[in-house]
Amino acid sequence: MKTNCIALLSDFGTNDPFVGTMKGVLLSKAPGLSIIDITHQVPPQDIQTAAFYLMAAMPYMPRHTLFMTVVDPTVGTGRGIVWARTENYQFLSPDNGLISWVEQKEKIKEARFVSNSSLFMDNISSTFHGRDIMAPVAAAIAKGLPEKKIGPVFNEYRRFPFPQPVKAGNRISGQVIAIDHFGNVITNIKRDYLSAKAVFNISDRMLKDLKLTYASVPEGEALALIGSFGFLEFCVRNGSFARAFDVKIGSPVEAIVSIDE
Image (cartoon, rainbow, N blue to C red; front, side):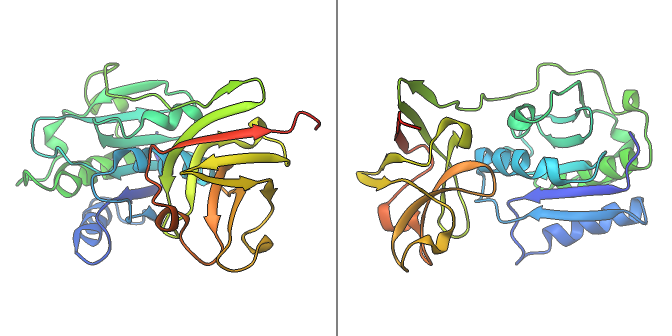
């Protein structure tokens, strides 16, 4: 699936030359590529947050975009690299579960083990496969490398399930699945589980009703709303909910919705 667009997601940050070096390899191997930086601020080694951001950003990328995702705490240990495709997108990732939640948006139709070493850089660092393996492979794919030349079909790639909320009557039990740069706490509960009138419990804090905007409450006050990702979020206006209430990824959340709506 030839493409002119590579979307990058990593935990490299922007203080070091890692991201720029990967872009250099991509553009050296495939001049004229368009490169989108989804984020390079994934918390270090946080595969679940990377999986969430990949899932959330995917529908907004151009068709046929190749996502090159590098959150790779086991780099150099023998873990594989996997290529996969859905109807509209392609993915190149360490085989560590990072692409697990893609199928919340589109079904993965094919996956392959990246094994064609003729595509790799001549000298491969054991600590930077993003530069030495993934970037040159991504460039080759972007230029139209036939899928069968990536490597063999690989259906046993690692994945972990999306934590679906549990509904019992008018109670919905969920959990925190991501915390963004602002300290907004993102849960796994989607809008269609909720009504505007509801009571929310998180970290021994009770909040009432969904608000429409962050500015719906006075500065410093906590609120619940449906964020831009389409999930229930807990926030503090002009502050950090996660820090204020010591919330972590995995923290439980409960919503009690009004049965009158």
